[in-house]
Length: 106
Image (cartoon, rainbow, N blue to C red):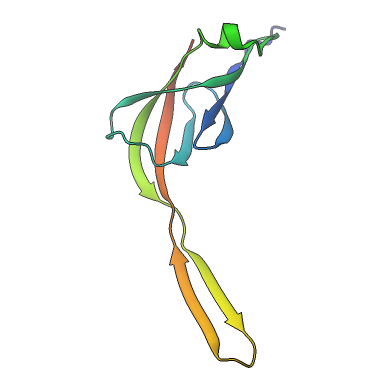
């Protein structure tokens, strides 16, 4: 029984994501239009039973992804309150995100 799994750990938006071909991943907003192709830097590559972590070898590895669409994250409510002083501040936030589909690891 052969273990023919190929995946990579990539750095995207200050976080690390485990991706394989065909996966959809949501990262912080990228300056790209839907349909554009972007490359993500690989930090680790697993090809079957071979694991690559050498930076010189990973410089040759490209992880390509296609921009599916831009979207916004869930609403986060921020409430500041101080007892007995009448201080109340309410604020909201929605993070700008980009949805990517991984097309190739190689």
